[in-house]
Length: 338
Image (cartoon, rainbow, N blue to C red):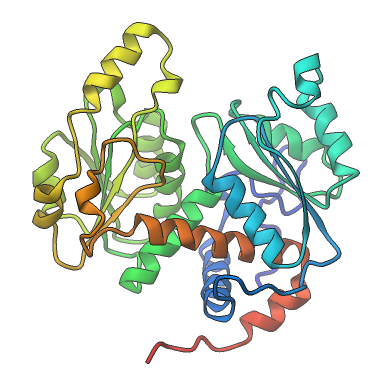
């Protein structure tokens, strides 16, 4: 397992919190993905172990979630940990009475050994990490900027399919301006040589300047296109996203986003135009940006992608809470499928 801190000294934080996708080094990603692969092979659905039996995990979610919360809870339970949860902490916690996030985290850190936090504020996970004491914080999605564990499972899915990430052509499609999943993924992809990213979105939903600046800094080739079919036909990965209507700042903007959502639809025609070994991804939930008829296409990987989330999060929990078991497992060879 890599030595040193995987977040580093930033704003006084030096504990292994998971705050943002760009905090991970390539070495750490390789260890995490090897552990994920091992767990996926060792622990089929329904199988449980007791490697975290002495720990309690809290999932504290101030925004709605199905996949991320259940994925973390499944990961914790299958590793033997206990789980305490709030699926809508904004309304069903003392936040409704005016309690600050910092005070809530201080209380929860006395009850849980690790806290998975989802919040509407961009800086929420960082604020939580500053007051959580010995309980690590994992960012389960914060504001519009970060969703690191989603990006980790996305890159794992890409690597699992292609056997590599370097040199691939990735198209990001949809509401890129408000999509924390694509932003986090862009940060992680910048760690791999030769990756080319194409942003496919109408003007109201184009990728933000800070992400483009980051890609320029790391010498990642990127461009913007409107012709979805043209881009799909030459992409290894097409990463679809839904339009985030709930994040619209006005009724007018919401209507514009609804109209924009009709611009780029993944249907049979687009899917079949993609290279034979290419893949279609989506962080889910989808609305209408991927037609249900595409589900049977061999390029469709979004449900496998969601499944991988359980194993990536299991690996993260294990790396943080049980380093002895992590060391034992990563010393094992990966058995190749027959």
